[in-house]
Length: 115
Image (spheres, rainbow, N blue to C red):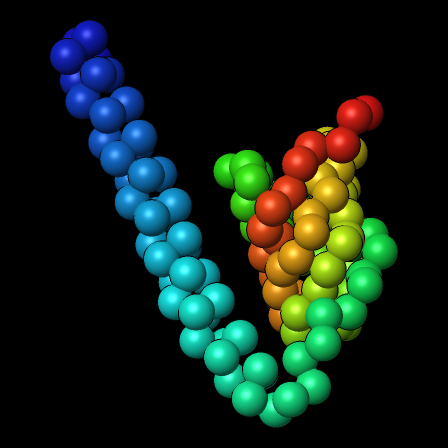
C-alpha cells in the first residue's frame, strides 16, 4: 500500500467518524427540542435533584455533556447532578439537563470536577 493510499484511507475513516458524530448529535438535538416541550405542558416538569449518574459512554463538549448507558430510571428534567464516566472515572457537575432513563442523559452548564 502506498503512502497516498494510506492517506486516503485515513481521511476516509476521519470523514466517516465526523459524519457519524454529526448524525448522532443531530438526532439528540431534535429529541431535546421536542421532548421537553411535551413534558412541560403537563405542569409537573419540576426538575429533580438527581445526584450521581454513572454512564458507560460520555461525550463532553463543555459546557454540555452527553452520556449513554447510564444507571438510572429517572425520566425528565434534572438539576444539580453529576455525570460520571464509568470507564475513565472523569466526573462532570451539571446545573440542568434531561434524562431518559438508562438510555441517555444530556447536561447543560456543566464543568469537569477535579480528580
